[in-house]
Length: 248
Ligand SMILES: Nc1ncnc2c1ncn2[C@@H]1O[C@H](COP(=O)(O)OP(=O)(O)OP(=O)(O)O)[C@@H](O)[C@H]1O
Image 1 (cartoon, protein in one colour):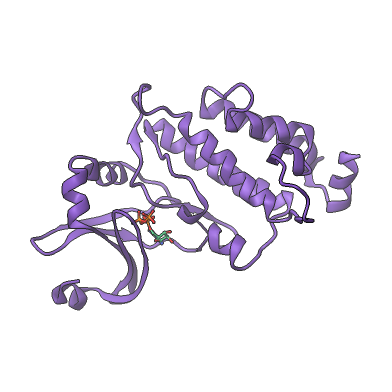
Image 2 (cartoon, rainbow, N blue to C red):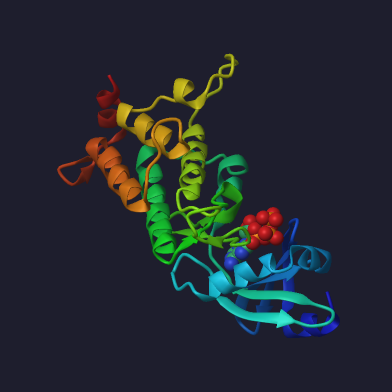
């Protein structure tokens, strides 16, 4: 990184290096930002594609999506300064902290992701990379980052329903956090996870194993139907025992 940028932004740590760039956590005065450097080689190869992340982030205003603070385009550095979003990645929370997500928490996390997707799709944007390393969580709020693969929906190559299988796969990571492998032969998720009938159908439809959902509004409707049917009773969360009874 060029020294001038180190003067303007103090590099706190390197968060990661991906195919397209390097992510730094930086500070400027009291404020923390993310500095995402785009690799020059990749930028040239990717051409117009690199423009999507910038244009898409600029068009968004959502508390769970980082704001694009500014673009830096210089001879020796090309990248973005992004709003710093709180939380650890779900990847770290599940695989490093070994946190177990119970249904109530899966419901709370899932409902936030559905809400974020509803916003993105209403802006004609498909994210195409909703995965555990690109979602942050502080125990309450879910944030979605990495818009490198996001595109404007054109209903040909880029369809809104592409995000549904990602959402399904993401939710499966949460369900598997409580799964105990007993050395059994590996079976498909729909056989080995202990799921309520409605949950099973909801996840199968997200994943495209059963008839795919047509829109995020349909996903949202089914999400609440599915979870509220057995998690909420008279407006209150069922406790673990009560949820278990429903499975019998
Ligand atoms: N705005 C943000 N606030 C906080 N953390 C962020 C933010 N943006 C990215 N990160 C962190 O940096 C990591 C890498 O970011 P991002 O995925 O955008 O970079 P990338 O170069 O596309 O990486 P990859 O190729 O591995 O996907 C994320 O997993 C997340 O932990």
